[in-house]
Each structure stands twice: as C-alpha cells, then as structure tokens.
Amino acid sequence: MTASLSVAGLGHRYATAEHWGLRDVTFEVQPGEVLAVVGPSGSGKTTLLRLICGLLDPSEGQVLLDGLSAADVPPERRPVAMVFQGYALFPHLSVRDNIAFGMKVRGVSREERRRRAVEVADQLRLGDVIDRLPAELSGGERQRVALGRALVRAPQVFCLDEPLSSLDPVLRVEARRTLAGLLRAEGRCAVYVTHDQSEAMTVGDRVAVLREGCLEQLASPRDLHRRPATAFVARFIGSPPMSLLPALDGRAGPVAAPRPVPDGTLLGVRAEHVQVGAGEPLVVREVEDHGHEVLVAFDVAGHDLVARLPAGSDVRAGEILLVRVDPNGVLAYDPDTGGLL
Amino acid sequence: MLTPWLVGTALLVVGPALVTVGIAFTRYDALSPPRYVGLSVFADLWAYPEFRRSLVSTLAIVVLAVPLRVGGGLLLALLMHRGRLAAAGRVSTYTPSVVPDVATALIWLWLVNPVYGPLGLVAGAFGQGLGAVLLDPAGARLTIVAISVFALGEGFLVTLAARRELPQALYDVARTEGAGPLARFRLVTLPLLAPVLGLLTARDLVVSMQVVLVPTLLLTQGGPIGATKTLPVLAYERGFRELELGDGAAIAVILMLLTGLVVAVQYRLLRRWTRGGALS
Image 1: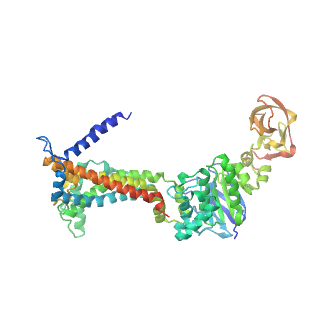
Image 2: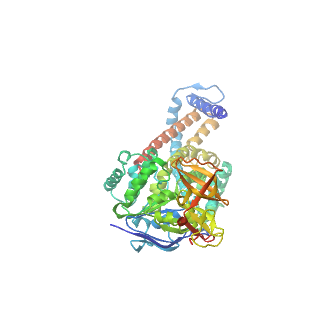
Image 3: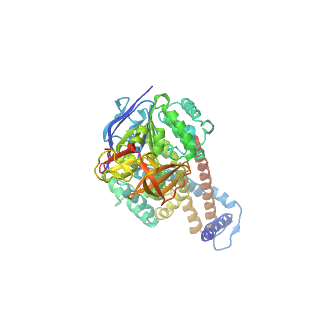
C-alpha cells in the first residue's frame, strides 16, 4: 500500500501568540520519499509535525492524506506515526510494553500485542532487551524503541522530530542508515525534522527550509546547495555556508556580479568557487583547520570570503594570498527581501 | 554540617522513643518509680474494652481519611496543575493546612453547630434539621475525617509538583495513540505518580492521626461513646490524664508497630505494581 502526504496553505497560530507558528506552507511528499525539514529553533518545524499527526488543528489550510482531507480524522485514526524528540518513552514500561502501548489503548488482545511487539523488536535488534525498562537501555536502543513504537502502527507516513539529536556522533551515523532504510521501505513517506542542515542534506530526498514559520525553499539537496533561493538559505545551508558580500560598482573584491546590479546587492559565492594562488591579493582573517580540509576566511572590506584549501595547507591569519573567484559560481541576492535576483 | 540534626534526632526522637518502649513494659504513674511488669501491660490493654473500641475507631477514621486525603490531593492537583483559576485554587487548597489546630477546631465547632452553624442553616433551608452532629458517633467521626481532609494541602502540593515534572511528550504520545482523558490518567499519570502517592499514603497513615489530635481533644474529647477516641487520644488520656504512663507508652508502641506494618505491606504492593506489572 502506498500513500502520499500533502499539505496545502497550512498555517497555525497559537491562541495566545501574536505571531503565526506556521504560515502558508504547501508541499507534497511522494510514497518512498523522505522530506527533511530544517530550520533554526522556533521556525515551526515541530508545529508542522504536530499538525500532520493531528495533535494540533490548522488555523488555515489543510493536511491531505492520499488526497483526502484529514481535518476530521483524529490522531489515532491517521496512518501517521510520530517519533517524538527525546523519544518520550514511558519510564515505567518495559521495551515490550512501550512498543505495545498503542495496541493496549486500542484494546488489541494480549496475545496479538505480544506477538507484534516481539516482531518489531526483533526487526530493530531489540530482542535481547525486550523486558528492560528505558533507564536500563543505551541511547541507541532507546532511539530504536521509539522507532519501534512508531513502526508497530504500520504507518503510511512517518513524522520524526529530531530522531538522532540525543545520540552521540558515532552512533548517529549507524542509526541514520538504519533509519533511512526503514523510512523508504514499503512505499512509506516520511517527514524528518532536524535543526542540523548536514543531517537534513544526507537524509532527505528533498529538503524544506523553514524560517519563522514560512517555507523559504524546498528543493533537492543538490539544488539547495547550488542555488539557494534566498540569502537566509544561503547562510543556513552548507558547511561552510555561502559567503555573502555587499556589491559596490558591481563587485566585492575579487567577486564580480554575474550582471549589472545596484550597490548593496549581496553577492553569494560557495567556497568551492574560490581559488587561491592567482588573482587579487587578500588578507587572511581567520583559519579553521578541520583536518580533512582547511577553511580560510579572507577579509573583503570587513566581510568574510571563505575558501576551502586542501588538508595540510599551512596558512596563518594575517598572511596575504592571491584569490580568484569563478564568475559562474556567483549569485546575487536582494539585500532587502533576501530573494535571488 | 549534619551534626545538629543527628544530635537533635537522637535527643528529641530516638531517645524518647526508646524510653517510651521501655516504659511500655512497666507500671508507672510519674510519682513513684516505674515497676517492671513485662508484657502484662499489653495483655491488660487487650482485655480492656476501651482499647479495642479505640482500635476500631482509629481504623474507621484512618480507612476513610487516608484515601480521601491522598485521592483528594491527587484530584485537586490534576485539576489545578494548569488553567486560569489554578493560582487562586492552589492558595485556597493549601491555606487550611497552615491554620493552627485550635482555630481549626473552633471553626468546625461553629460550622457544625446545629443552631447557628452554616451547615445547620443550609440543612434547615431544605426543611431538614442537622441535629447535634458531634453527639452522634457517625457524625463526630465524619467531622474528624472532614477536618483531616481539609488539611490535605501538603499532600496536594507534593502531588502537584510531581505532576508538573511529568513530560508533556508522554501525553502527546498517548494522544496520538488515541488515549482519551481517562486512559491517559490510567496508563500515564497514575503509574508515573504511583511512587509519590505511595509515599504520601505511608506518610498519611502516620500523620492523619496527628493532624486531628488537637481538634479531636477540643471538639469531642474522644466521644461520643468513644467514636472518635483514636489510639493517640487514648494514649494521651491514659498517660497524662489518668497518669497510667505504662499504658500510654504501650499504646504508642502498638500504634508504631501497626503503622510500620501497614507501611511495609503497601510498600511491597506498590513495588510489585510499578515494576512492569501495571500494563502487560
């Protein structure tokens, strides 16, 4: 069975708040697709998930499951499973009972509950710890229990709220792989919320960037990286993020505008389009040695132009190097609206 | 740092308790020296009808008061853990607990007065006299229970604090699984608050008798016909009014043992219930 999820003009405003938590968000997620939603805290990511799974009612717009409005469908009857931030495991229940919680609420028979809980636990390699309490589990195991509780509902749509954020970095890579396989299995679709842009770029087939409740851009990771639709996305996506420099007479140091632009226009350039060794002399303001690469920030009239140098490059702050920028890699953004020109 | 408390506890609690246990094996009237008589004080007490009646009165009041106090505290805490009137509600729930015992006794004396008390007037408005509440055994017991229930402020505060510690996300999970308010209470709130409620019950078994000791002495002096003569009241009466300190001490020891027994039993029940047995 397959299902698609779409939201149309979706918005939500808390009764007590002046601002919209989410405003006019529209997108569609196809079966088998993972949509990563990324944005700073307070950008409406969790609100979006709560609207999709039915914990909140939209103030405007609607959630559509398989093309049908979900407005009158209560959370438990939606084919949507949510993995909550921090996992929200019941501390007084064993792994088995945590997984079986929803079935217990719905009055599924004891044997059926046990059978399905064991099935899911085995699938997630939790068979050996099935009788333990959450306090007796490792971080990775807890994360899988939270996943199991969602899986056991056999959902068409997965909503995940920062599912990896409480794991240590080593476990995260492995957990991310497990997750990616499960999410795409059997034509499910998933909405994956994270504040970490690099996680969003690796997990998502497409990535939605939220800012203050509004959708800034929705694109494939590649397009998002290549052509950020707004200055905000340019600054938010990529490590390092895009350098943005205000233009004066159509240029900013070695960065030339792709076409005539008014003064003050922000010229954006990714580090990979900045070459060192020829061109204009610039002062090194700061050096970040990441081991596998060295990031160098040059000073251009008080703004940073970041270049990526190969591992082992020996550069110090204060040094003067020759810098050239590939004119095809330069984008121009309106300084007021932030929009791509 | 701990020394003042260690010394204080030894001097004011452990010491007197040991002396009490010692005196319980003697006949002692505080004038002539105590005379060791072994277990005969306990045997005499058991044969003494007033003691048995007191035991029954104590149980009757405890069995009503403790569940009402703990359950009432829980109910009020859940009602008031958020909402518009919660702040005012919290203050008014706690206030009766800080009113001095003597004042409480006087207020209740007025409340249940059949002639000019408000309860009497209300009952009168419905064409029914209230009668002399405190002269009726059941009425007197209920009044004592009511006094202890109105002083549930501390249990309420503890329950409220514990409820506020429970993460909202657990309730979100329950809601996405379709648990209504009652199911959320049964499957989430109750098991997670169980340790706190258990602790409060244990404490209440001890405290509910103390809370009402002074009001009882002032209101009913243990009457009518012993209906409110709980073990602490009897211990006070035998020990200090009738100067049978051996009897008073023995009653205190029995009360201590009974309380310890009940607390131990309910602690074991609670542990079995919270350790996984609650759901599967």
